[in-house]
Image 1 (cartoon, helix red, strand yellow):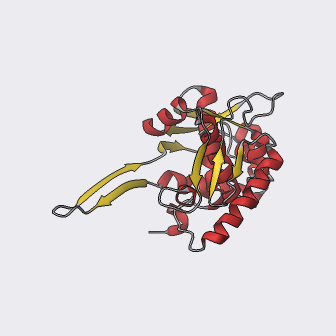
Image 2 (cartoon, one colour):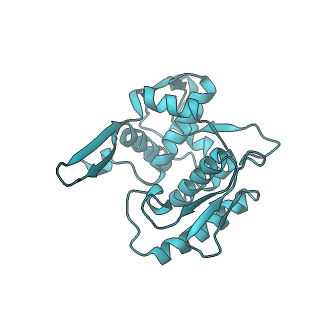
Image 3 (cartoon, helix red, strand yellow):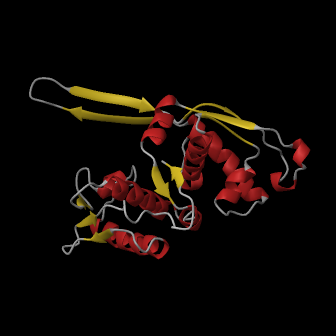
Length: 239
C-alpha cells in the first residue's frame, strides 16, 4: 500500500468540506464543478502549480480512504466485536491538466463529477450546520485548529438547553474526538485547546465555548442565537 496515495492527512480535510458544501448547494449527491482550481479559490489558497498538484493528490487520497468504526468488548464468557465501514465517495471523474490549471484556457477545462456515498450525503443533508467561509479560509493551513473549529460549530449548534460539558482528556473526551492519535501528555493537549480556542474566538467572537474553571473540560453552550456565520453573509452549509 502506498501510504502517500491512500491515507488522507493535513489539508486533505479541505476536500470533503468543499464537496459537502457543493452537495448542499446543488441539492444532490452527484456534484459537478468546472475545475479543481475552484477549491483553491474557495479556501483562498494560491492558484499555483504546487497547491494545485497537492489538491489533486488530496482528491485521490480521500477517494481511496475507507473509515472504520468499531468497538471490542470481552465479557466473562464471550468476545464481542462490532464494526462498520464508511467511505465518502462512490465515484470520481476528474479532469486534470499537467500544466498549472490556473493558466489553462477555458475551452480546455472539462466538467468534473463526484458522486458522494449515500451515507455521507445523508449525513450532511440531515445534519446541516452553519459554517463561515472566511473562518475556513483562515484556518486552511492549520488542520488541528480547523478540526476544532468545525467541532465547536457542530457541538454548539446541536446543544439544546443546558450547556454541554466535554472532558478534554478522558474516554470519549475531546482528545479522542479530534483525531486518531492519542495525546500522551494531557497538559500539552489542554494548552493546545486553549490556543485553538483563542484562534477560533478571533474569527468567531460570539463562540459560546469556554474552558471550565478546573481546566479539565470545555463548556459549550448553544449557538442557535449566535451562529458561526457573519450576520451579513449567507450561511455556508457543510458537514
